[in-house]
Length: 393
Ligand code: PMP
Image (tube, rainbow, N blue to C red):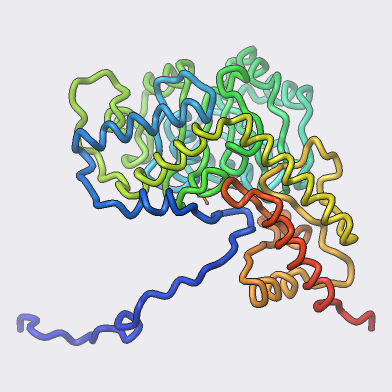
């Protein structure tokens, strides 16, 4: 009997209007999106293969080259969140059986190690407690021992609040014939990073942190050394969607006269990303870095005045975009965060992965990064400290 009648009724929830409250997004991301970027994302859609869209993609490429401080031709934005960029980097660079070295001092190294393991790489890890740094000597020893084709390091370790130093590591990777992959999802625009000068071979970020675009797109760039390996591999990457031979064509980076259909890019997401990169270009990287540093120092001082302890002791290693606070004794961090959400409409978060139960995280990124917002965050924390104290019994 052919199906002829609808047996599943329209769900009542879908007959009610969309509800999305205003929140102060003072956690590790996403951050609040400024009206100009929201407006760009709300413009009428055009086709993903229209010439005007190619122009917008070309603008995005230029905006990323500025933000990354790179002249790399192979620069584009992923149709997907930061994880799409993580997988794109690993899937395209590494072939099954090849050795990969991952620095783990928080969740992001753990994730990349898992991604590389899933695609059949031989994964070696250097593991430290969340928020600890690796010395260049330790890195060089591990490079010499494991002879990886790829070394991964997180610049802005958002689960721990660490801004990891990068200088000199690119040279070590070059010396040991390894490609240097850096995650700047939580740090780009907030802390200095120089892709070309620091000899980073592959760099990616996310749209939703200091760039203040909605989540869902992720800038990435590969230098010539990375392209050389990526485009001369024997096996095809495990993912069709993330295959750089297709994505480079879609972004007009492969020198071919025509861009072919590969997938339908997130048109609104690209409009918004373009606008967020334009705001960064207008403001200037140096000013943005300085603003994050100043507001972060103001926040750190305010936190210490509240009697809170910062998780990363060395000021110079603290991530200016995401601050980690050690959980104050006598408090339940979940209760504090729930209190702040309920009474201040403000998101702050706990730890992530290995830092769960160790920290609370406050992020003031890009558009959110100013002293009045820092004061609001401090006020909310002070209020929670007053109301959430556990009895000693
Ligand atoms: N790396 C870092 C350092 C991050 O902070 C995040 C997001 N919290 C990611 C990667 C993953 O990005 P996404 O959630 O956009 O996939």
